[in-house]
Image (cartoon, rainbow, N blue to C red):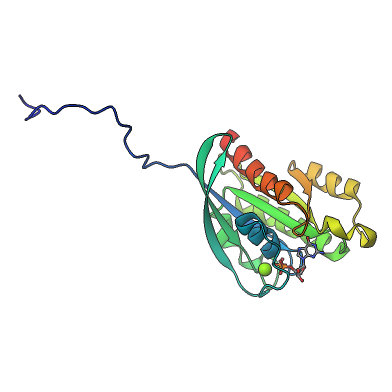
Length: 187
Ligand code: GDP
Ligand code: MG
């Protein structure tokens, strides 16, 4: 026949070459805990000392709602805010913008990142997923940013909002990254 030799057809699913991927960039000023959150998600551990200038991208095979996804995480290390943001704005489908609840300045820094992402992804469909993250929830005693201030900023940029800690439970950090995947799937 025109198909050549007829083969028996095994009912074995073909390997999934089009595996779903989700690229997530972790943004925010130095010291907000981007690397600690990234490492926590990847290893379930809190690493307290991490080179503040180190920027790297990691991959992790995750199962989110019973569906596999290859999560790529860019743990950024901007030296001067989001001035050279091309490398991540054109790459990521989701952005976690991190501040530390015990540092007002880190919160103020978030607005620049939110604006930069907005500006550079204007008109792009699907819209990027934006998540505002108040980290260091274990530092409640030294809180400088109220939960409602965080929620208000998130509402202004229509992003999700989480308060977490890189040194407390793994589940809430994992859930936050998984929410980024869920939102990206919905987009
Ligand atoms: P990055 O510059 O945003 O990557 O911040 P790092 O992840 O390097 O963290 C900066 C500092 O904050 C380090 O001394 C970390 O140990 C500390 N840190 C990070 N996350 C937390 C947290 O959730 N709670 C507390 N108490 N310290 C944290
Ligand atoms: Mg870092």
